[in-house]
Image 1 (tube, rainbow, N blue to C red):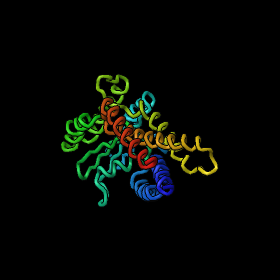
Image 2: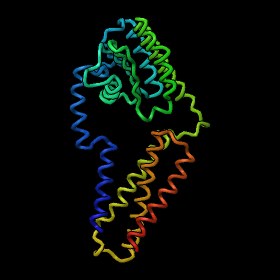
Image 3: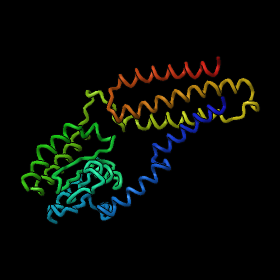
Image 4: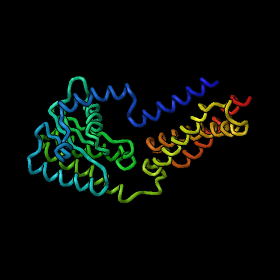
Length: 274
C-alpha cells in the first residue's frame, strides 16, 4: 500500500516537472531541436527584434516599421508576436512544425507568423494561453484572405506586413476588450488557482511519506483525510489546466470538477478504509 502511495507521489512530481518543462527526456529533445532551429533561423530577440527575415522578403524600412508595431503590441499587452521568413522549410519538418519550434525556441510567450517562400505557405503558431484571444477562425481569415493570396500574387512583402498588423490588432483588441459573455475560461484567470491546487495536492499526498508509527493515531487519521483531499485537489487542478487550454465553459469545469473529485474521493477512500 505504501508503495502505491509513493508511486502516486512520484507521478505528481513528474507531472510538476513536466509542467515546468523540466522532464529529462523532453529537455534533451528540446535542446537538440533548439540547436538545429537556431542554426536555421537565429533568434531575433537576441538583437531586440521580433523579425527574422531569412527569406529576405522585407526591405529594411518595412522591417523597422513592423518592429515598431510589434514592440508597441508587447508594451501594451505583454504578448510577443514574432515574424519569420525562410526560403524553404527543412526536409524533416513541415512549415507548421517549424513554426511551433520557433515559437518555443524564441520564447515569445505569444504567437509567431512563419512564411515559407518555396512552398508558398504561411503558418501561425500560438501559445495555448493566447488561443482565447487569437481564435482559429481569426487566424484562418488572416492567412487565407491576406497572407497566402499575396504570396501567390508575388506581393510577399505586402502580405507579410498586412497579415502581421491584422494579427497584432486582433490580439490587442481582444485583450483590451474582453467578452465576459463568451463563458470561456481564460488561462490567466485560473492559472494561479491551478498552481495553488497543484502545490497543495503535492504536499498533501506527500504526507504519506511520514512514518505513521511515530505519530499519534488521531494525527494519522487526519493525515489520511488530508491525503484524500490532496488527491482531489490534484485532479481538479489538472482539469482546470485542460479546461483553460481547450477553452471549456465555466459550467462544464464546475460540474466535471465536482464529479471527478467525488469519484476519486470515494474510490481512494474505499481502497484505504475498506
